[in-house]
Amino acid sequence: MKDWPLWEVFIRSKNGLEHRHCGSLHASDAKMALENARDVYTRRNEGVSIWVVPSSQITASNPDENGELFEPAADKAYRHPTFYNLPDEVKHM
Amino acid sequence: MNKTLAAYVIQIADNNLILAQRLGELCGHAATIETDIALTNISLDLFGQVRSYFQYAASLTGAEATEDTIAFLRVENEYKNALLVEQPNTDFAYVIARQCFYDHFHLLFLQKLQHSSDETLRAIASKAIKEVTYHVRFSSDWLIRLGDGTEESHNKITQAVQDLWVYTNELVTAAPIEIEMADAGIGVNPESFRDEYYGALTSILNEATIPVPEQKYFQKGGKQGIHTEHMGYILTEMQYMQRTYPNMTW
Image 1: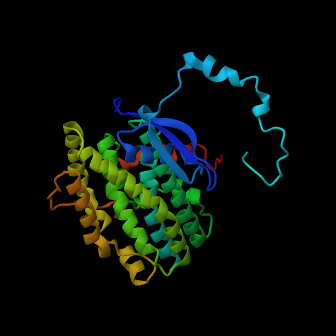
Image 2 (image 1 turned 30 degrees about the vertical axis):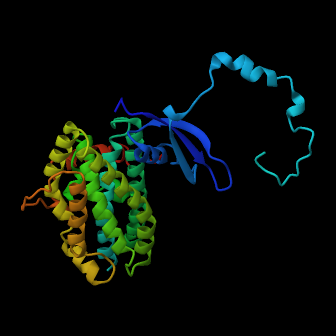
Image 3 (image 1 turned 60 degrees about the horizontal axis):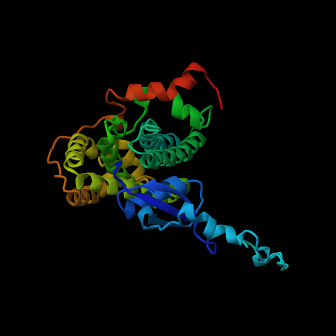
């Protein structure tokens, strides 16, 4: 069991919203990963849909490159859409 | 009639109660964190069903009875669960085999109970059936995985299936009260789905490459209140609080 691959779990809390990463777990295959995710992450009524993805399939950015990747965005406040007034009816922005 | 109905409702629930208690013992002890949570989820599903049954039984009995007195204050031979559910958590293979044998019975039983003439039993059955459909899926998947897995898992699950098979037939053998309640249109005669039950188990065992046991002799007695040696230990732990601190509540 210690050889089981790692899976990333994404849950959609209700229809219309996006799937969000909520954690990871070990399972021998996709079917088991889905059932484990159901048991571990939706027992308090958290979701209506589950995705599981092999962690090995995720390509991650290198923390050593954080400077060139992310710091240039830090001083560009004009890229934030904070100059618009959002109607109250628009949720989840 | 109410008295017989109450006894019948309690008998249905006792299977769930004792199995849920057994599964609860695994909290913090199962093979992986994922199966630990899955098995205790199943335990809580079963306890939830027990509460519905016992509340109904208490309302039929009247007097001082509550769901708690029914759960905690009976003596061993008043519990009418089948022997299968009191068998110990020997290892993960035994847990899965016991669960799979019970879940398939449970689902077939609830499918019939949905057509009861009793409104409360119909309601409990249709709520429980969603939970139990998932239990069947979980335990059947695991039985197949273990049977079809490594040599070690195959040998362990084969042993567990072999040892627990002797308790299967009691589930689908009608006790007098079950016949009486079925004739009244309220209950279910489990013999009406015996072939279907063994058919379901056979097809899963085949898929799991586990030989179907051929034994012809089966254990029985739980439904009459005659239990295996394990039952006393389960009740001792389960009843401890109410026996030591009578009427305590959380």
